[in-house]
Amino acid sequence: FQNKINLSLLSLAGHVPCGLICHPDKEHILYPLGCTVVIQELDSKQQTFLHGHTNNVSCVVVSRNGLYVASGQVTFMGFKADIILWDFQRKELLARLSLHKGKIEGLAFSANSLYLLSLGGQDDGSVVVWHIDKREAVCGSPASACSAGSATVVVCSSCRDEMFVTAGNGTIRVWELDLANRKIHPTECQTGQLRRVIMCVKVADDDNYFCVGTSSGDILKLNTNNKLMTDYRPQKEKFSLVSSSSVTLIFSLSSSSLVTESRATSRRTITKKIQVQGAVTSLTHRGQGHQFFVGTNECQIYRVNYTAFKEELIAACHNEAVHDIVFAWGTSDLFATCSKNDIRVWYTPENKELLRIVIPNVICHAIDFMRDGKSIISAWNDGKIRAFMPESGRLKYVINHAHSLGVTAIAATSDCKRIISGGGEGQVRVWEIHERIHKLGEILKEHLSAVSCIKIKKDNQECVTASLDRTCIIWDIVRFIRKQMILANTLFKCVCYHPEEYQIITSGTDRRIGYWEVFDGSVIRELEGSTSGSINGMDITSDGAYFVTGGDDRLVKLWDYNEGAVTHTGVGHSGNISRLKICPANKYIVSVSADGAILLWKYPDSH
Image: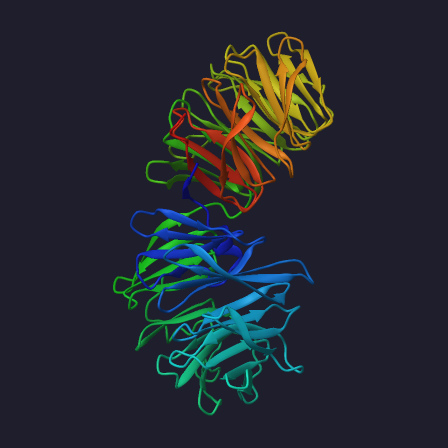
């Protein structure tokens, strides 16, 4: 049960500066995704996942020779935060290095990959030198003086293994390693009257100088030998600033050019410029700099050829929690996902985004494709039901004030004449959908809390609703009466009809999977679905032989329906799984999670 492709870049974009890295072999890129480090081939897009961290990855680096990958994580205050050293070729964990507490702020390999430098977060405040071959710490020291702020950046020398630079709030230090005495000696760099918060550092190829980018938009140049500032740009007497935002990334493409990411740039120094969506969090060059990649906090990866200096979007995904996923009727090639601000339609054969529908400042809780393919219906937290054209994304119609506490669940009948919606207040509403008129047909008022899931029977005469009020209700949607009520000591998160429609399966916060008789609402069987955390999503195959579940344990589990046993388990998510779907042809399982990830799994061949 191997995950085939991953469409999400949340951790790279939002939380990990310089998290997107092009490997020295020019064939792979690496980036963190929650607790996982992803290695992706550029040509085939095939991905490998490095699992080992217990919390979100905070930094990733690759050695200059390409043999090693190192990643650090965040943990709880007072607890040790691990650094993991990986073998790139074998994709295996080599060593777990634990000295820092709270967070690993930065990592850097020395020029010849003899040492790994690590910088602890604000609660730790230390810099440590690790011997890679021996897998042990050589020495450590407080990263900044008591009179200065915390250091946030560590960068190694380009030529020497024994020299590195740390910088941060009011501090720039050049360090020398004394291996014989197992000590590191810092020298404070002098910047005169300038006091800056350093955001990034780039050391020259010959080690004679290094440049630092600052939060005020300046770039300072310092001499590595005498530790003095020799120049800075822009200077107020010579240049007028566009704004005063920070320089957060800086790297050289060649000996004669420098690329920076900043909203504060001098009009007189810009030679080439591109506009990307979101704030830039990563810049990484491929080879000698003829091509480079840009990562942003809007979960976009761009490829840029330096000569043409034209951006090409090569990957995109949600940057907020994904709440729902649904396949278009009868096809495995198209599915849609929804999140805060947007709905996106994906094309599975090429693993790319086809359509993005953006509604700012609102959250889409649920979506469904109308069976005739003419619209995508969606449930929003502002209480509206919105329908969009599936090809253009144009708004088709809006049902205002559909629910007073937001629309939390939605489903459409197979004849496309009615929509069933559930709200935060617990009401279930039936809407009559005509070509030009959309009106409320009936209100069903049994639930006392938010409706979490709605499934409609094939004949469109019955539906089942799951709610956080600890009930599931089977409704007659012709006579608009309750047929059966299922009670359990759980907040129901998901429900599915068996394809023969004589049973339903449910799950929720009690981690148990319940089989129920539709006729009288009696329980048939209960299974332990998870050892930790709620089960938030489930789906069943078209023949009813297997079903799939996912939840807060972050595992995708495939179950034999009759045996009630797990046949396959998928490990890949770093956030709580919110929903999952089996595609109509049983080719894929798609799961989405609270960290913004969308994972596409190959359905096991044996089934």
